[in-house]
Length: 278
View 1 (cartoon, rainbow, N blue to C red):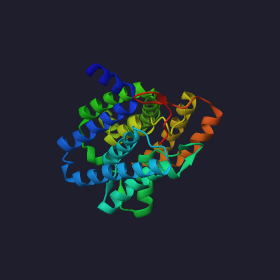
View 2: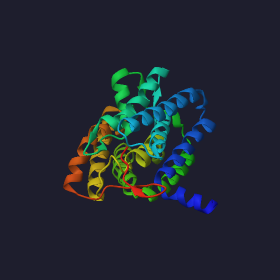
View 3: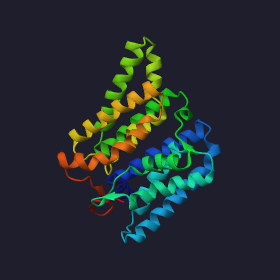
View 4: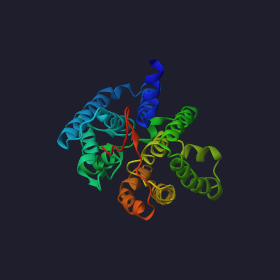
């Protein structure tokens, strides 16, 4: 019986995502003094589940795994979204989940929900932000979390996404910091090992529903995103640039999917393989 349950758990890649994000969040609460934000986390999770439930009922697509996508989104917001008030926190969850139902193209949502929630809330309220500094300098911890991220990617078959990002963005940063400026290797390492970048690389740009389906298209898309992010970070000191660049490059995904055609990714449910884009 236990082996059957474990088998069902391992079939669905979303279970890996939930576990990974939950470990990340628990690590922050236990070791990085995030316990002061527990109320915000509760608001994000409860609101996301409520809006997802209402949306599923509205479109008449209610199924047993409806809560998984909402929980993944809310955990992502817990890790990345900092706000000045509970009202803004509430809005972030509403916009993130709501975007999946309201902004769609050819039957699936266009934006990564967490990415949309972060950017849209910031644009509307100017009361939310992404704080790269909240992760501290725990390099070993981030490397461990990165390794766990690769386990998730092996399940969703998107290992090429973070690899491309770190090769292109990391390579450009290395050339700029070490070769051009002559700074120590440790400065470069610090610049590419923030928790925000780890989450961006292992969670946002690996989303199988909102990133290019074909590997070549995905690699080219992420490479362009990495180059633009590098310019914004180094020339304009815009350290959350990758998140904003992803937002504005998401509308290109349907075009890339049309040029390089590939089957849609399938979330495997506990009973049958089905495509679930909500």
